[in-house]
Image (cartoon, rainbow over all chains, first blue to last red; front, side, top):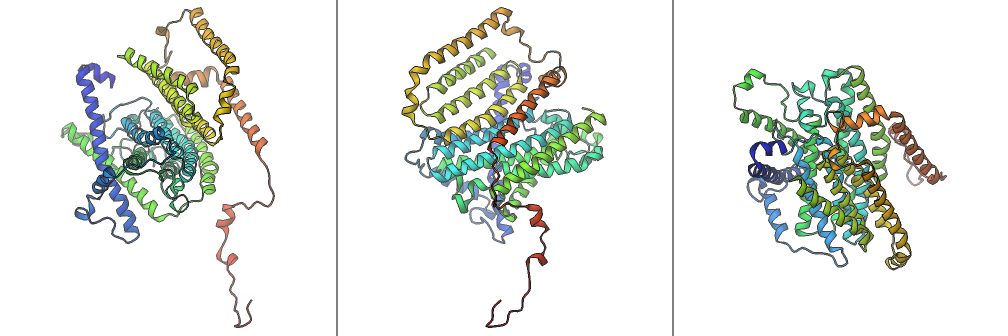
Length: 358
Length: 196
């Protein structure tokens, strides 16, 4: 980014960066409106319901109607709540969810900030997400939100450990912490994607297992069913968001869904080759088209993968019953942690002794 | 540009650092502490040590401060009682603070160091490599030793708190999944009026 600014002058450089950020924000919010609808539609379809179908054709405008409703309702702040922290919590949750997108490369070179420690940045920002929840639960000054936020914090901290180790295996294989380079490392068709890694055939079972574990950990990390214990509506009403209403609630919800989409994007980038299509088109064929057109195609692949993972998230929500808390902890600490630790050993051993080009 | 960013962040770190001890509510203190950590990470990014900055956020903000927050939120703190000892602890606190600043000043002036000879990645391409070189090659033994000490501390904590209670029902997943229909279900012909 700074190199870009030096090249194009301060003002133009800053304007471009701000423009990029705005573009990302708007596209994300718009797509989120439809992803939310998709979530509800998939859920409904599994239960053989119709789902939202009144507002607009096929209910396409449902999310916008909900949005308007959230905005015009009254913000209720419970008496005895810690007002500043109460309002700060959803803002923080949303800001962090957006901030993470700064390093996500959606097509070659199409990224706001191409950090060298991009993976670590993502990991750091997503580990901050827990604060929004803890602050919200505590500041509500109420029992259900507090219990929900405690559960959620413990859950997120536990699964972060295994997510971190799984990411380490990918970093080892790619030899870089730069997300663009991790994607570039998977160029050349679906057999070089990290999830299959057929070019390192010995690692195929390991990386496939890592991918599945990442998916499950991502479910737990974003508090999605079957790990939605923080908001288990049958026991805790709605967890940390019980006391929230109107816009603060909306911010929480958008933040939560943004995190889910972020996890989908991370899975696409780390394991499924990011913007690469499953069958490479060949240099000569691609060279005939302008760069922006090729990049739009890449963007389409990336978005397709993200939507596919979001579909899986929605499907899991509908078909899997909720875990019990001790089972959740057992899975995280006793199964995922040792397995991913072992995988780190195997992959690093492979990288060292088989001489993988870093 | 960098100077402006530095002064803004330095001001935020200082203010939040003071607020940590000035805040009346301990939870607010921890939140200020988090802001201080986070902004220090920003300062590290400014001098080019982005790996350390990310580690600071992941480890301190993402894990350690969460535990702080847990403990502080769970404590039933009596604020009046907390305030009482303040004056008697004040000289001691000042002493520690002065010693701290004096040590930093001493180290800085003795070496004649300035901010300019700070090198975020000496002899390596980026600072991830530089840190890896230092930790896993130059000081491998010390690094492993410190890891071992942490492990001992962890095991110690477990040994101190682990209680084996008899008659606690535990879930055995292997046992559960090994269960078959014939282990659990028995078909009985019950004659009417007699029961089992």
